[in-house]
Image: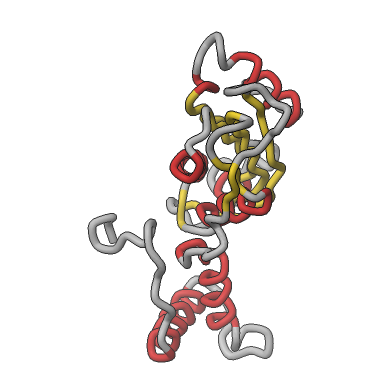
Length: 216
């Protein structure tokens, strides 16, 4: 299936019907049995059903969270006009499915926001976790998650800058192919002032110090 066939990235998906569940569980049972899973044993009779439910749960980010957009007016009575401040939220733990092998990758997300203390809006702190998990709980890629988070925050409150960092372990590396159990994947994206070579330098440094991470 290509991206032109079905695109659930911007809208809610429909729940599976009982007929669809029965059909897909049957497909899964055939595949599992063909590649070695015991069939109709006490431990495996319900495996296709459990697998389909687990797959549905881990990709629940296609079902849009109604609480994701709560925001409040910025306020700082003693701050100067246009004074900037940085907020960093994380680590936000996540699990996602790599769209290449449909195997999990998991780790932590950090989100940094630079905004004016007297102008614009702010997100409730829990909304950063909701935003991160909205985009992580899908068939996706690590780079796409951070791009979607950054774009969502920029659209929501129009801050001066957004930074997103992800540190994760990919089971497609540790369990197949090269089978490297010690490989970790770190990635960063900078938007707005964070991406400025000079103005952004102190914000990037503070962001990385609070994360206790450094890019390679």
